[in-house]
Image (spheres, one colour):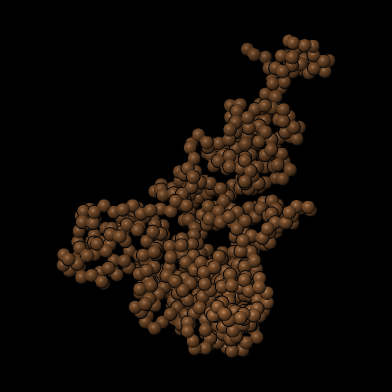
Length: 604
């Protein structure tokens, strides 16, 4: 549904969010007093300068300046647009996002690109589930494969009828309907000669026929595509949706949505190869399994996986094809190998796959196999040594030549240095000698999209005057919003007469908090998102806070407002004195001048 997300819902969402839980699922945090610290996920560093405050529901990096709320983290780390970040955070809490209806007389909000396809795919997924419920053969097949009713429901599994046009007839009765089905990858256009006549609907046929259907969902649970497993004999055994405007198989991981619905903390992901493997593993008590979608593991797969967990275990069949797939996965995993992350490779016995093996031995025995999983470094070295005879100089030189491009794909840091030591020890030389043989290693290129904008230090704060009083008042309000009660409505009104930079913005924040109290820094910042003042407030919230307690902050705010209002009186006094030199004052102005002169503190 289109429409603006109401501010009251965003306030409530931020109030419910736990930014520590959200970030710790992606970045390993360590408690430091009342806050949590880590090496910043937005730039390379060895000394932690990234902190997360549970009280303020705010994160800030003193190294690169990255900062924000739980929503801001999802936008920066997961690269989600604001509406999708709201949807993602809401889905973690089981909340539906409301939308405001357009105001009367306004132009209708255009439907977002792809919204029609999401709607269609949702309807088709429901239809496939209906077909499964009605088809005894399909249900019997699912039972033979060990799928229980709970798994069928949780994963939304359905059935595509053994027909060339049943889905087409149900959803493709118009030209527009057929266009949408084609764009979603659900129907295929028939090949025909140029002079062959074509009647409506006859030029197309259903892509999926007589298959158990597995919907592929994104992080928000929306259906993007389908995978179909043939029930009877036939090829291909598995058939996936083609690439569409919504679906890119090198980016999505099957089962990731279901993993993220688990209430348990996610510390690892098990990456397998098939839909059935994922469903059976979850059903057996391993609710952290995901699968690539008929393609090799890609760097984007790894980026998404490491946003959820810090340990990834690749699980492959032990045959030749499985080991070839594992080596391709290793090559793509190297750029993501960093300190604090674990990458391991588990090979199953020949003839077994996760689906069958977990059915035979259960979750506990299956998880016990993780002890034999090879760390990335060990697998890399063992694979090279298995391919090369390093008992002589030629073999050692060949290993060095093959290892160099692999080392260069690793980010600079402890992981690369340790693997270099491991490879050097394998051929009996020091790391320094190994580098002399290879020559200098190229620096791995980092993704510039992961680097936040660096801002000059002089911009860290709100542009203010009066000896920092406005800045002090604003910072105290941001960190302790409840102290707004220390400023009366009359005082807020009087601030309107003060011609000092920053005071109009201070009054805006005071008025907003007085009318709509906030519980945290994050709530205040989200109210000003996308407004001119918003980014300045975010930078100010990230600046070091000298006043640690709410009571002291309230006193400072009260004193700052008193001093600012004294400036109001001083400015009015100067104006009246200046006017009296050139013209007569009215009786009211004379009384005001007398009062101001009497109230002015004596010097000396």
